[in-house]
Image 1 (cartoon, rainbow, N blue to C red):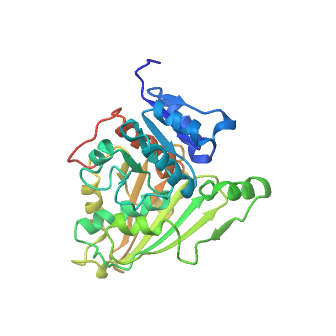
Image 2 (cartoon, rainbow, N blue to C red; image 1 turned 120 degrees about the horizontal axis):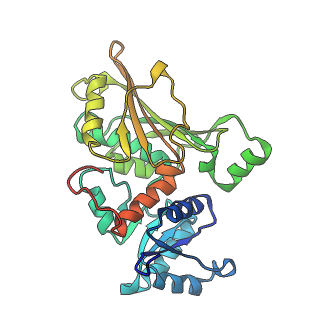
Image 3 (spheres, rainbow, N blue to C red; image 1 turned 180 degrees about the vertical axis):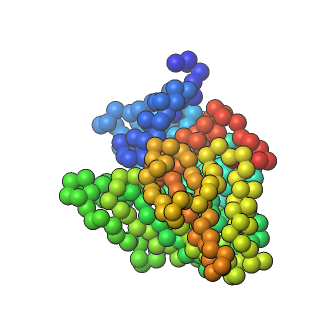
Length: 316
């Protein structure tokens, strides 16, 4: 590898997301990965010295640790590397750019130019992709009472959940976050363009990875009383030309499974509508470890390091 290859340090590379990013970057081949010896990974001095040597740091840490690590990077002043945070810590921080390049026109440019980028959450990626285009098109009121139902593979639940499922079988299916305080709600509301806090009901199934996010709507409660075709047209217009976000036909037979996009960075959007009953269900499918985590991170890294060029005014 050429000495000019951008250098990247993954702070927290032993976790699920860190390992996923590392594997994807190793396969990428256009960057040079740097690591700290395992016994020094908690040493602030060693980490600060490493940050001074690299072009970009990826934070795959719990929120409090991510805040400490980002402050450590910032302490380098003009020598500070770019930072991509995969935690929840900075997703609604106005000083950080939200790392969903397809969010709206020019978002990929903002990611490419940013010093600090917050990688999106897995559930919000699907929900925002369904809601934001309808809000921008004037179809969904900003105070619409959005309800988000979602199911993820158990790898999205962290080490303890992975251990439960891998070693003891775990439950076949369970709802969680029923206190309605899930950490993904603030970013979903902010970047969905909503003024009313959405209701979010996540769940986990006994499968390793994959995700479905669904949002039911009464069509007559939307502006202009649109048809299902109108909703699809708004999504298609918003994501036209995007490499990783596609609007596709409703699932055959009215059934859809969660795992078909595993190990990709793709996000599929569908509109299942019954215009007779004036109802629709918007559905997003993605890999919670792909476009929902490490895949999105590598997409942002490529933009931040100039390895791919933003589309500019076009979405994606």
